[in-house]
Image 1 (cartoon, rainbow, N blue to C red):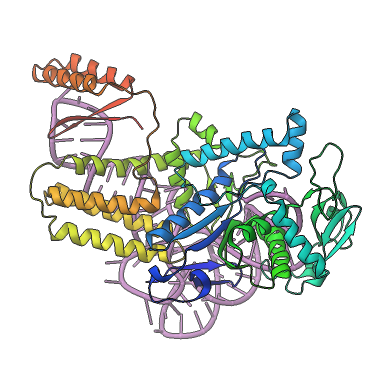
Image 2: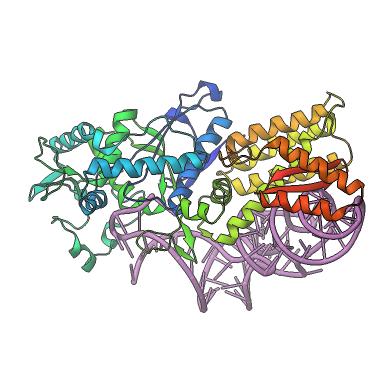
Length: 477
RNA sequence: GGCGCCGUACCCAAGUGGCUAAGGGAGAGGUCUGCAAAACCUUUAUGCAGCGGUUCGAAUCCGCUCGGCGCCUCCA
């Protein structure tokens, strides 16, 4: 089985080959080098943004599941028009402003159970690397200066437009470009280094005082961290043009080697059928949804559940459906935990089901990260195990084997054994004494009392479930 | 105007040439139960926007039509 992922650059579904040289065994490969465009920290990220970040996390987790090592960088854009404007608006320094939103962003990542990446460079700490690219491009005559700003001339970079498949002549010309604050020779050229304006942060450089253009940031951070062609570059589809196209142009022109082997672009999250974006104001933040009583776990499940190359329409009903689906998983875990004693041998039926799960899951996700198919495989497994439990075919050893499989699958999903919020904890022994009391009341046919205890527990968020083996409880989702 | 994507059951969503169209939610029926809830089981599309065409065979390929969305400008 081979992991293949659609590559925006080639338009084909290509095998992932770290370092670009095919090896006999996964363990022979160098770590997969990945760069993901991160957030601009000027406000709360919305869950459309988080679709991309959850996908990045799923990608790196799956690569590890398949035996690869990963070396993953995601940048923090902490200097641009929006952050500068935001800081000015609040009368705080740029650093104060961006570090606040960076912190909030990292909190959101953590609550979505997104693994920390190996590198998280900040644009403001990578000025030296930007200068390296700019001076190389300057030496090679790719640049021109105008009103104190430095521009890249795309006319001098022949392959321009390969990623986005936009014919240069067809890039819409006219009105919209007139609003650009900086003057350019050609409408398609982009700024590498921006002349300072009043009250703006600025760095002293050989190319004059100023601040970085957006596109140079990513190219510089990639070079600084990985120093050569990287395996995978990810980002939202809206970054294909011009951001990623420009990254390719400046990096390949500067270093004369391929920039990225494999481009992966994540489709947009829609809300009410149109793109969720800050400028449209039609967005939900993670915190909005948590306030409505949804768990970050359900959000993770929902965001990860649709194929990354398809637009996904976000609805609150969808979040509720995700809550329900997760209940189904939790219930299996409870049922497995209830299997006590019995044989240590898992039995052939369970062993076979676990093996099928692993094989089918891998086959599904190997196919361009088809998580939806992977989830289908997973729920079929759940169903099979539930039926075996009903038939008494799951031994203690079988239950352990299934639990191990869930742990392994969850190294990819990250929503099965989800870190629980340190919420208000209810005293477990008190709950158990209440359940004991209720069961005594039931024996004495004092159903009024039994129901009263049930209602009281429910009020504290504890749900009683009567089963053949007696009552058990769980926290209300 | 240019480039591209999508339209599968009540909702979400896989499947992109060949057995009976995954899976989740909701609904219905059942098991269990003091009742209820929960849980588990069963069940739910002769059909894949519409119309033509190619093919022994199409949701899947081609053409047209209708509908929705994205990019071309800051954007995940």
